[in-house]
Image (tube, rainbow over all chains, first blue to last red; front, side):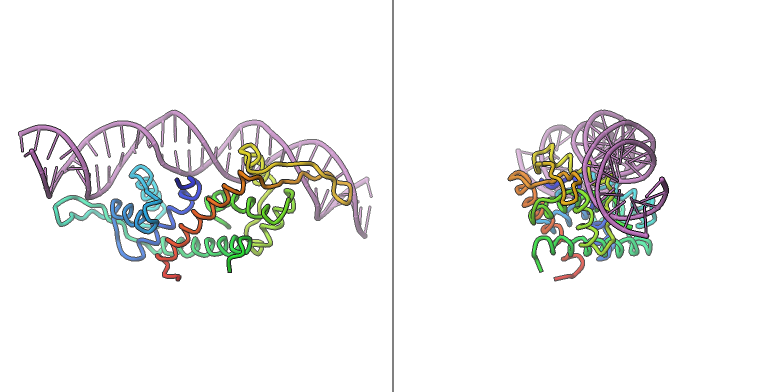
Amino acid sequence: MFEKDLVAATSRTFILSILTEGDSYGYEIIQHVAALTHDELIWTDGMLYPVLHRLEDSGCVRSYWQPSSTGRKRKYYALTDTGRAELEERKRQWHLTNDALSVLWRNP
Amino acid sequence: MFEKDLVAATSRTFILSILTEGDSYGYEIIQHVAALTHDELIWTDGMLYPVLHRLEDSGCVRSYWQPSSTGRKRKYYALTDTGRAELEERKRQWHLTNDALSVLWRNP
DNA sequence: TGACATACATAGAACCTCAATGCATCATGC
DNA sequence: GCATGATGCATTGAGGTTCTATGTATGTCA
């Protein structure tokens, strides 16, 4: 069971990073995160969609509807320049934090 | 300016990690964190002490008063076995998250 | 004596999170 | 046809968290 604070702290970073690989939609993002963390980090709809909405509200992503190959509606999300900028800053802070913790943990 | 969510998510981890090097007190912990992050992460008293208190309440640390060499009172904090266990789990989750993000960021 | 550094504490305003629940629709098996 | 599961998106508000602002205390130095 993942610590809630780490889940919360990394959700925007994960989403923005996944979108650098290409536009994606909610259900696929959830599956992507689960795969990346070997099914340890399982996001729910109720967790993900509010974060996606806040990202959109803050101009970090934009969305559009597109039917899937089976006819089902999908809401795709695409990274914006604002989102790219936030991601760079979050990466920088993550690395800084990771470097600091690595010193404490004696990991080079 | 550090993202609040990353600060919040890493505070317990930083404190527990610093205490593996030896007992410490509030003011020194604040300085240690600032040094480790090249003065980018500057914790305030009001941020730190509630976290220390919650760590103590949850049995992760224990505290004791000890005068400093100048006579001033200091409240030292020491890691407990519970704290060591929580730290190990947090380290594991941090590494898992870091590995997942590294895949996305193409950092080997 | 005043400024500064050193030291710990706490209340509560402000903010955040996400579980629970809802609705929709396609595929599959009986 | 109906049930089930997978696939999709949405929202509210109970519950929880955070840390700013403010307080008190005390040693050093000019």
